[in-house]
Length: 455
Length: 151
Image (cartoon, rainbow over all chains, first blue to last red; front, side, top):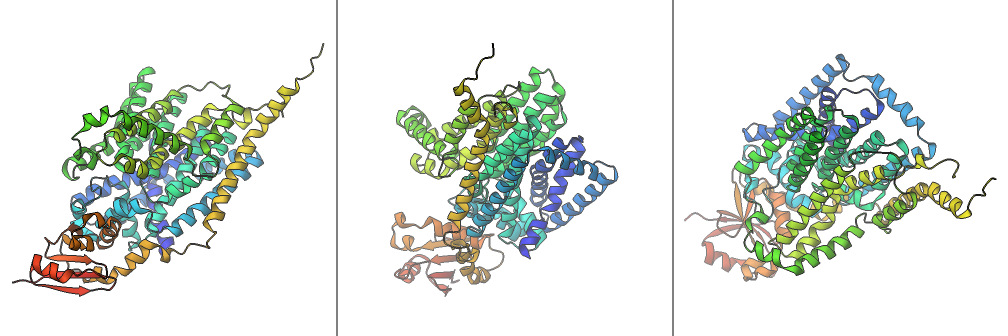
């Protein structure tokens, strides 16, 4: 019962996200509809988290917010139906698009989806409270907010962990618990389940929008089948939602680059900002995404797109700035800034970090066969697509900025370097893993491109 | 004149055509392998999870905490013995998770303190020396809720 309630408690926010997207980005093609569906989690939970944060900061109870927000989401959905911004005709048109796909690929994709759901379920049964960082850094804050009432700010008095972490997940879980009226482990489980499915769906929808259905199915299948995807997805850390935000912001940048549609710019800006509200590393992603959006818009002399992007980016980035300025204590990395110069000049640290980076890269998927080796071998066999797709530099730039920032953080970390690498590197790679797959499968020939005669 | 197809080219084309299917099958096998590994010890029982059991064990202590306090002290055996290298960080974080929304503060500065001691720890003398009179309520498993007595 609590499980069902917890999943049901997510629906108003998913609906809210979907309606907001339909209000901003009116497009009836089936390919766009899939994008709208899988972007709904980021937009819905993002908007809800920002608003609920301001609500509790003003001293109002989270339970009242949860009810008001759900009612508003339902009213908005009813209005969208009435004004035909959401129509069943659009939803039905998605089916023929799926049916056109090869039967093999449909079966493969459905099997991968089933395997993924089973793996997600097994991880959540084994770790109902999530892995260690979930209960030391993330879900514990949700408990402060839900159980603490107007004393929720006691969370900033916590010792030995990271009370400066942003509140995207904490407020989201607290709203779920308020609706379910119980601080059950099912709240965070339902949230991470929704994000895991949405990340896989978003990868599919983006490759589908920019390439074709078979390539999209293959990309989503590779992503869902990696043991690490389910393990990190349901560890209840912020890494997976962050990976989703990065994929969404960059994917929409490519879509804009290809089609010139400016409506997704608002959503991309918003999700890049929510990345910073999800995890501190998301600030780097927000900077990277903003740089590529700005470059892309300026290259195309399209200031309107840039303004729209800024319009979406402003609310979450302002919230992060206010949170950091007025509530959050200093970050542990920033607090240990003494001796930075010595650490930067220490050549051995470079060797240790690069060595660990190579080992962890090889282990990214967590499976018995390295996904990096598989991807490299596959790329060698099928080769680069003959299609011309502009903007492939965009994911490369964002990935490079993200990796360079992580390298620098390890270089200057005041913590024991070996410990810091051991406890975080594999998760950091996952921030860019869906984006890297997206980039790879845009670059490669799709199964559809392999000529029939050659078979 | 019609050229005969190069057998090597045909082989390469065949490889290319089947490569996506092979990749898909290898990945699906990995996903399925993960399921079988997870189920090797049977279906996981959420109630048997270490954090779940800890959280359950902490419920009586949580209910006994006085209303309205923002922070509570935390002592463990390493502090009593004066051996900080033995401090159990994991139990500290588990305790913080369970007693939220009250923030734990290391040491005995607060009027209320949670004691998390192992069986051999002689904490009474240490407490008397540091905080004077106190009341300690035991919750089993070495867990105590300690209240400094008002003079």
